[in-house]
Length: 503
Ligand code: CA
Image 1 (cartoon, rainbow, N blue to C red):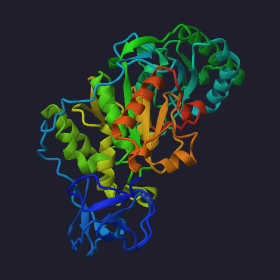
Image 2: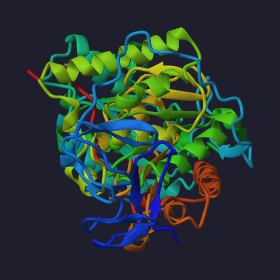
Image 3: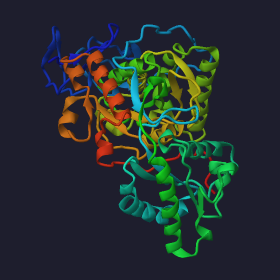
Image 4: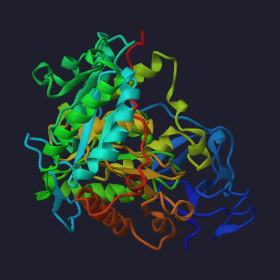
């Protein structure tokens, strides 16, 4: 087992793979000057005041004071560099044509009739226009699951698409397009098999017409609670409609499909300094195999890639894609600036405890999960993709907000990398957990699906673990395996991204 990891020959820091005591000769000629916690950095050379601190071959920041060789480097010891400029970013200068060949090129999915991605699960999704209906709908869904769903063996689940949007919001605000688009697109999620069912209160601002379209606003698809005579009638109406939809969904069958029918989302949360060493590069390798096989992969989280955006621009296949990337970054810069928030608001305290000093270090690790494929499209939050390949889908970094946006984009499943650990999950699509270090897998053996920790210790390569992740993705997509979050029903509330005012 190795004691430290150096990622790039130009780095003047290394990351320790386990807690190291002060005075340890960690490498020839370098003794640790303090205790160094696992995943934290130490200096490989003397760094003068204002000198560059380099990891991943990029400048993480500048030393606030002189740092001696062997010294622990924590977040209080460096000053942030400026964000990369969004003007005239180079594009197309790093287009990788040598992606790894995937071991499999098909999966067992639910083909969708429209020209969109396949489902990975067969689910009745019940849409809501407003949160007011949630109490009634939740009772009805419990009853459906208990009394009706067991009759329909080919349907996996019934999911109430509850959310906090719909009323008390500035529905005509410029940025209202974000939450409205999110809910419109979730209603069309590939796992819902084109079956529309919506529950409305009757007086809300987000009308049924707006949510599912005038053409779909029919008595076969919509229940309006204010038109029902009392509670019992509401429950019965929801149960009756659900059964009709379940009968149709029960006819769906998996079929062998090429990977071009598969849409996978990548996300990370609770990152540590190993996320960028093990979990994210392994997921990136799986992403490269997926793209090579014809699948589509989304990566997201604007604030976590902002400080490495130039490295994404280099991989954009056209000037238009680069421009859209710059546009999405600028939108977010302005969104934060309007509230006088800067990017130092990220990382979270747990990230720092995990050895991540600042957002630059986090960004370089975060981008690693996108692999090395060319970027063929950039999406605004919750838009649906129009291309196949690697796509940057702009979203906030917040796990549940990003998850909700990617669901709206139509992901069949999400791969979630974590260093510190989170039991996060989505009801409408499986979430696979990949952790960055073995200790977390030992602590949470039945929450974490795959550990990339063997890459940290040097026992396995990124390619080996990346191939394991790829195979697990296809097994989960094909319904052969379930990740733990799905097995135990660990689901987060949908958090719709609403940058518009609440009234
Ligand atoms: Ca996240």
